Length: 398
Image (cartoon, rainbow, N blue to C red):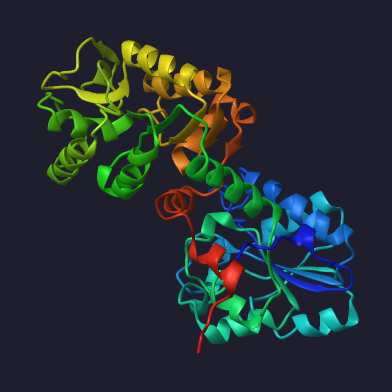
């Protein structure tokens, strides 16, 4: 059974409740100003389409931050409501709570076309996937829409249990559609040669993803702190680089499973004696005892760039180094530049690598930039997510 999307059904006269990911960063000066509205902006095509199609009412749902099931005004969606009202040029009413009893009268009188529920995670029922909480959310509408890919790996009430109350009336939004189509293209029908670029911190966080990709890729380029356990597993000295014994053992397992020598490792490094210290190019695989590896070196950048330019499909997850510090950003930014110059179908997923691509100013040169960090990783690993599966076939709570 395939996911049905909002452009496949008539929406005129329908009442809709829709889950989005408005979990945006806010300023820490007490004013709660939105510092990056990208996630809201990405939701606008779905919202605008539903309004244009003539829905009677539209109830929007999201979480923000981690208030742990308690009301915390620091995590109020008030700034989101104001931003949406400005972008949509329509009133957006912020409900006092997710299950505010004052909402239903509004919906009946149609005084309000767009209502944003207050932070779902102010209610413990959200993260508990509580059926009763989900049922109350479902009572606002006769159609349910999920366009929150970034949380669809969670079995939370607003993405999972809620579908039980909308038999054959659950639909995906345009963002979910783009995410699923792009990831399926990489996983199910990639043009060859295909490479995966894997960075980040811990092998243990991505071992299942790496195992899954090793079957399909032609090359896997390893960078970031992820590289040091692999290097140590091959007998290379890694100095004071981030490298746990557990990750070294996992790296040994993965290297043993790599029958086609697909895993490519750094041959040189940019290192420092401290995270805030001066950068030094180490022109060998071995890192001196006092140094911390913080980026891939110039020869590795060249080697990886050559493979990128020969590829037809690229999946990138995780930065090549400590890119937040400009001294150690060259590896990551060079990957972004090489991918943007290639003719490959390119997908970047994972919070840090997405941040790096946006920082590079080259995001529009990628075929797809995923909005889901953990969600995209889990989709790559399993080929599905609880929230997507629930859209297709619902959830049986009996």
